Image (cartoon, rainbow, N blue to C red; front, side, top):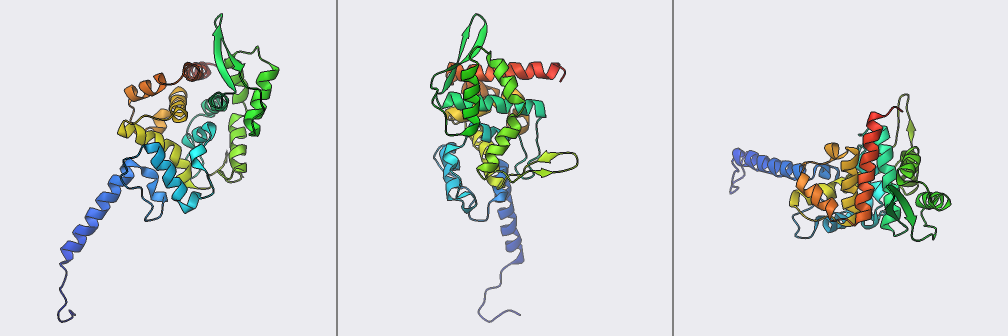
Length: 276
């Protein structure tokens, strides 16, 4: 019953308001589909800053990831998240390709840290140690120790060697860092779900938003994009297959990092035509 003096609202206005809200949310999710994991009030609003800054700032403000410094994410961790489902932890790429990509990312971490570089001579591409100081991280420290002990091996040899255990090694590091839940052993598969789904979606979200806005990526995310392309993961991760953007992003990298991506792509090609 209407109250005297109260203005009655037209029911059609209420439904129109709800429809407009639904359309707004649909557009937001189309741009950034992992936003539905964030509580109301944490949806990122239009921001003139770069996509990398905005995503890092959002992650730091979010109470769900308050203990994780996402401004200093590791390349292999970012790639691991990108090629696994951000809710279930299911591998989205073939295990052999995932292993090669993560092995390249581990070596890429050493290169990004200035510990190693790639050099070619007489048709052989090798890793050259620039700084033998042991890294604080156990995974890259072990990889660097192997390279120091066997400096004559080709880069492709190191890639194949590390690829055998790269997925397990990276997952163990991420579990220790609180990014993955302890492994759940099932009858047919062994997978680890992310501790937080929105955190797991940030790496591919940064890359996709930069492509969507035609903004430049930082060096680490450009290498991430290159490794996604090299392993075939870009078909599963990228919302838009923008070849010009990808080509420009990789071409802007220092020559050793471009070679890292090229060598990984060649190893993936050999892997797909060779028996186990």
